[in-house]
Length: 458
Image (cartoon, rainbow, N blue to C red; front, side, top):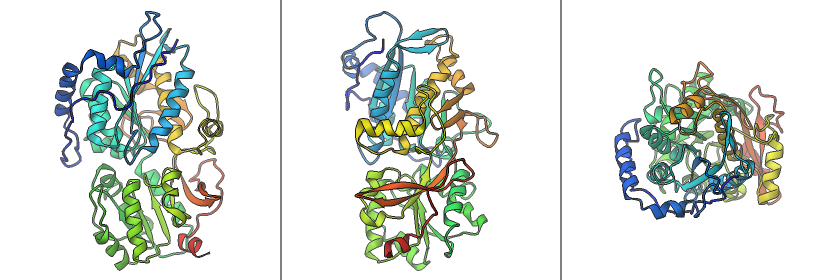
């Protein structure tokens, strides 16, 4: 039987790990390894019971499969955790009779730690999962702010990890990845910048407007990825878009965007794109409104992923756009339940009263990839065997087929997934995300991409 333990939010945490920028390397693995060792020594045994809710694996004496998840329960990325909480309870139900590991079926325990939307705290949460909860594998999503430090802690300590919800270049190159010497313990599936550029071209290309693009980029790993001249959004210049030069990047948490806005206004940018977090974008948008400047398209990754973040922006969000990595219209079924994407979205609404979110499919898929990899593991005590099985898996999931290194255009630790484009449209007292660019997929668009300025004036 599956344990019903529920780790306590804000439970014991390891020492604060300082992550200092060092070019693309934003994590010192040796420092994390040292901190992890300190946490293993310093954390009292009683904290393990607190983290497990005092529960065990049902007293059967069987070795449990211990799965860890780092979820940003608090902070600017908090809406990811609501989706995560639902999926964790769903998985506890699915695995109530155990999970197959090779020829055996073993009980399951799932431990959740709060990354607090902060890289340092996410690293500490991963340290706790490894040294306090003694997990066999770590799962993580919630953007690169959550996934990257967790992946680095796992890599440093030889713990298998599967991550998602960050552009793969942010995850791989942002961690100092080398295609000639791939990571040994950490694996990631999501879309890449070529996919994103294709979606943006398809959406923006539907408008008969000047193609002047200004980029709103934070000074972090995602901002570095989006602004990279080799594979980032500046490559849109090859498709006929004029990228406004010298728009300065900003520090996360910035509340004065006057320098960025002045560049946008002076260059008469018609399209504004970027990857701010929701709080930063809201501050930027208020200040742009104060200048009474009206672009023709506003397309943001991360900031416009969740409907409640969009709702918080008010009626001006009608016509904002973003990439869509998963939706109820995606034609995939779950390996674990055989439910369609639409059925998963409906189940989420029925049980929570909230509309579907893109993150729903990806948190679900993390467990699907792991379950299919464990089938090929001889022993749950064989960490190297678990990592090797993950590297070889070809997993059918609710977000599509995941195979690491299966595409010659991605590193061996990466699996790519399809991407389409969406536009938020006002519906009753909220917003609905409509598919407006299918980029060759079998998803029927809900309609054309529309000019934000026209929508606001109608």
